[in-house]
Length: 369
Image 1: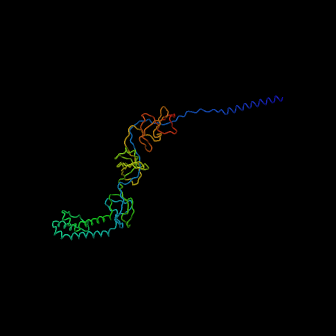
Image 2: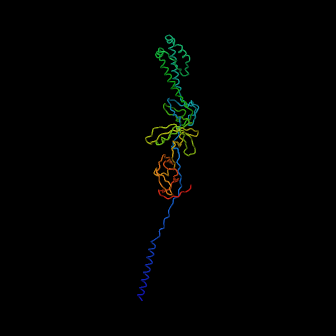
Image 3: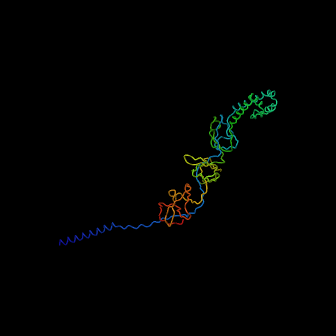
């Protein structure tokens, strides 16, 4: 009986071991699902080469074409001209911008003019005796001499004898000394060289202005100039007289300018050339930031695509029989966001939007956009 019981227990243990072993083996042999083939859906464009203009973008700040810095050449107290010398004040051409107190210097000039008049009067008797042929014109000069007006031009000297006679009496040198004083007297009033507006004022009425002191800045608000730096490689596309589109920073205003000057010198540090664009408009202000779109020469047999589609600046993805492929292209011009390229045959299907992880040989499905 004991032997029978031992045999039964052994058989049970053996069967249990077999079932447990089979379970462990079956649990380790999991079925790996077959991977499904992934097809990327893409949008494409069909290439049609055409003639495209090179549009160069650059930016800068407006500067008034006519702008003068106001400096004093004499010293005096600033007086009122009827208009306050303040920023934003407008003046017409020839109108007095500034007036300095010149009473002391004016008296000195009048004294010198009086002395010059007396000098000519003193030589008249000798002139009548020695050179009577010249007396009448000098007599007429004295009669027309007005001390309250600018000293008139000397009568024409027609002979060397007359010249030597006047030089010996210091008439000629005294005349030019007086004219020099009159010229300096005129600097006490600074007049507007053109119609414009004050953009900077550094003095006010009653201020003592010294010689050489800057007093302000005066501009013509009618026309401005925009200086932009352009890469030297684009120099061949630029030409004077080209119409330029100008946009403000918010893209809410558009102006039309014209290329008026091109500096041929290349900046050593930035390797750029300077292009100057003339623009006019009532809403323009000095210092306004504008972006210029300069149209250069036209290029034949090219296409324009987003820069994001270009790989390594020389390769482009195309679709051939539902498979992506890479082809070599020749970039002609790189813009901020787009690039003009050559070397893509007509009818070629290229990606219109970049796809992440794209590679040559990827299966794709073309979608209608």
